[in-house]
Image (cartoon, rainbow, N blue to C red; front, side, top):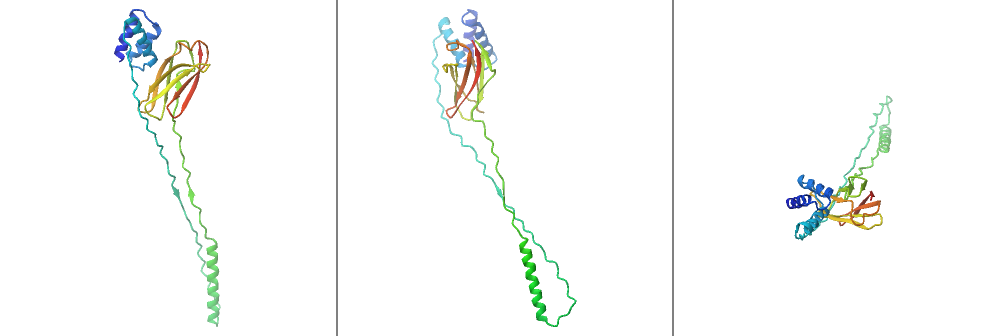
Amino acid sequence: MNNSLLDDVKALLDKDFGDDRILKQIYRACENNEVISNYERTYVQKLAEKHLGKRPEILRTPTIEQKPIIPDVAIPQTQSIQKMQTFQPEPSRKSYLKSKNSKTMLGITGLALLIIIAVAASFSFDVPPKVETPTTTVPVTLSVQSDLSSYNKKDLISISGVSNTSGTVNLSIENSNNELVWAEQVSLKSNGAYSTLAIAGGQGWENSGTYTIKVDNGKETKSITFAFKA
């Protein structure tokens, strides 16, 4: 496809048909195997049909079924730590006094044991379980950007971005009166990236002002603006 386009551009440049600046830009892009937008292809095709006697080509855009992407959900793990402190009773002092009544000795010893057990139980406690809060990162689902923030008439606008869908995205440019002045459907690469070129000129580009670039992947729409000087 690029070889046929390159031959048409050479023929148009040799016969001095069309805009020299745009044709040379497309010629360099063909030689360097760079991305050539549908707008530029259509521009060359119309000139070739008019001046070189080329027949118009019918392009069919295949429809690609988009499969929904289910995000991974991280399940937080809960760790429980339970600690218990136990205070050991100090050994009771030996009594150097001899008691004549053995039953009294047994009663005092039993009472002391009960007191020690009660004190140890009062110092025992449970540590509440520690729950870790999971950290989640929000991935970029759709983005669009341009190489410059302002353009003059007939400048090339480089548009690029990423989308978490598959298939294609729809790009468009609107002028300061919200009128559509350019549109193109761009295929996504395997990593979700896309890029294309547009020419700042033609119908709808007569007035200076703030222009808007929009991208739509079928699920959401993002936009950016740039300044245009006619």
